[in-house]
Image (cartoon, rainbow, N blue to C red; front, side):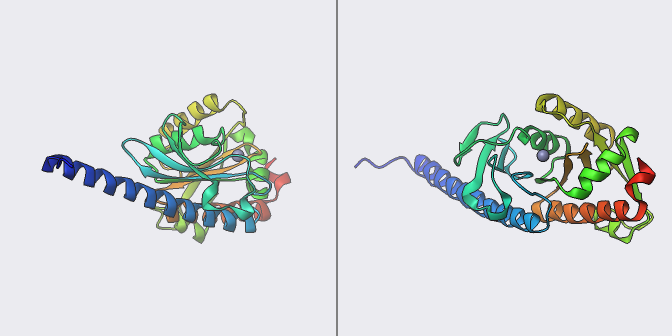
Length: 230
Ligand SMILES: [Zn+2]
């Protein structure tokens, strides 16, 4: 067999290495996302087939690992994840992404997020309905606020914007982009009577933000009550 020039051999080796790395990253990321999804289900934050989770595994070109649509999150497994490009094209895995993948992409692009997590908890549903008329809800004075990236004191005031829910994901993605552009300090937002979106530079940070925000939303509803703020 004719030997390839050394530069070509190097290219082939690099390509194989990069493909191997990409496979390992997809597999390990899908495993981590599946684990976080199962734990969120166990806490009642993603009942039925609700919620979706994603993490970036390549910035250029943009590629995300994301949940396939319509799955119960209680028994999520790595096989339930897809790798998609920035235009929603599926390049790995079986199934199709949720229509809400457009919102994940909008957040990744606006924030440079490494992971985006979306839950449909009772508390986010109640709170976003009660405060919708004000366009958001202030959360202030709680020690747990310090779990949000960059927050150093309980005196911090966190504004959680509430966007009107919609089934038109293209329009909603535009509204999400605008909200993130206008409100640089926020760590998450709510869709009215739908749920929470939050993100992080990586999956552990995004997961922590879900825990903190879900905790705070429950505290706010329990402490203030719904009738008071309606
Ligand atoms: Zn949703």
